[in-house]
Image 1 (cartoon, rainbow, N blue to C red):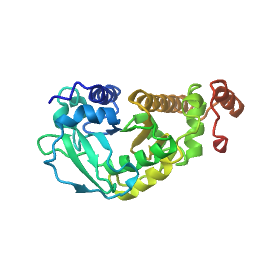
Image 2 (cartoon, rainbow, N blue to C red):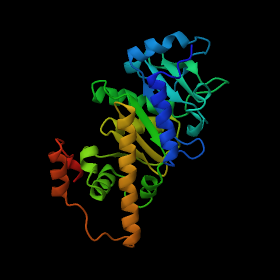
Image 3 (cartoon, helix red, strand yellow):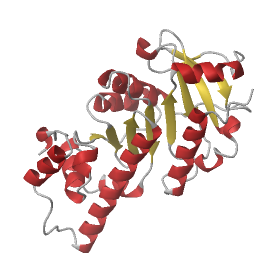
Image 4 (spheres, rainbow, N blue to C red):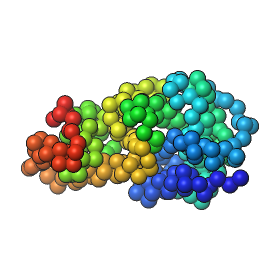
Length: 273
């Protein structure tokens, strides 16, 4: 059965390619996971196989045990996904105890899920809990300007949230709770997975210092739009700092930030003001 034309897989592939077009996925950089709905699993399950072994994860949490995730493959290029999904992405089943995973579709030819799957899984756990199960997308990319800011701003949620909010009027309404920050760590292991999980318990988006950005959302458009908005604000900040030789003559004031958020029905995280 060919399931590559189902809406979930088409939307997944489009988002991967859109990120490539933005320049966020050099070589095989970045990854995407999507927690499938019960209806999507039912539509795809005739194509599932049980030939792949269960693989222990470095992390364990039963909260999303038994769920199925679309995931990009380790070492795969985002630009190739729309043309050849069966070799570049896969559907991964989580064991009931949340400690193991196995491929049930895709990643043909010996492929494996992204090396950062464990980080994604823990982030899905905490964002699902924080949103009443609404959050389904976890997206990691390498936007250049947000990475550049990790070399010049303090690595704190307050410093980054304020800098981004002050840089573009749309930001307080798109991510009124701010963004989290994780200091530099080796990617793909348990340590960075746990640190990202802790930050994702509070924020929809988390910056990885000198590496990239994680965003989450209920659907592909929301997670992609959050990434796009944060990166655009970071680009404006970098351009302003460059033009002003490190000095900013004026920014949006704190009261203005609060007013923008309130005007669109949001409450700004005042702990970051």
